[in-house]
Amino acid sequence: MIETILIIVGTIIALLGTIMIFDARKLSDKFFSFGDQNEATNGMKILGFFLAIIGALLIYFNI
Image (cartoon, helix red, strand yellow):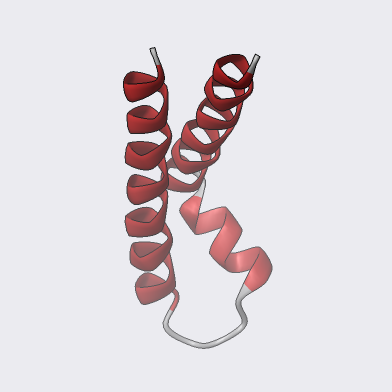
């Protein structure tokens, strides 16, 4: 039972990371209002990458 829950949580985390990578420009326009949006976009892409890796590792080591 706990394995299934961890797989679902890992999938959701990996999905959120992937969405952050591909929609970083739209999300930074929506949530941040400071001038340099390139830094915000790069930061969100890096955070999305780490989230995707954490989610994938959670799925990989759970199986």
